[in-house]
Amino acid sequence: MADSRRDPPDQTAELLNQLTEALTALGTYLEISDHVFRLERRHGLTALGEAIENSLGQSKRANEIARRLRGLLHDKSADDDN
Image (cartoon, rainbow, N blue to C red; front, top):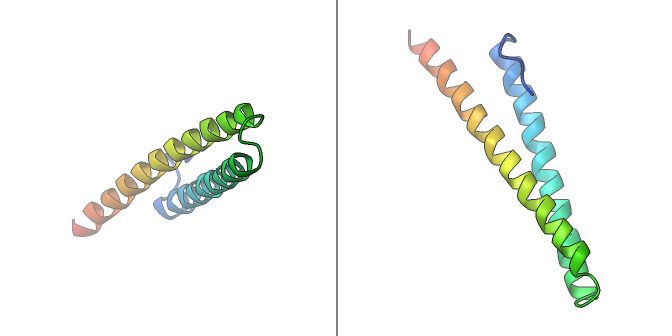
């Protein structure tokens, strides 16, 4: 997680890195879900459920990081206005 004592550009870069990781993982889990669904409609339900659960977790993570990034950018723009 980003350290609030670091400079805003460092925090922004870290948050963008975390967001990219979460979105990449989300895409991977969704590809796995699609593959399992198409190939193993009956026997792959456990694997499909796990992939969907992981996808949801990464989606929540990406949304939280995006919220933090928006806040950081909003704070920077408020500082620039002063």
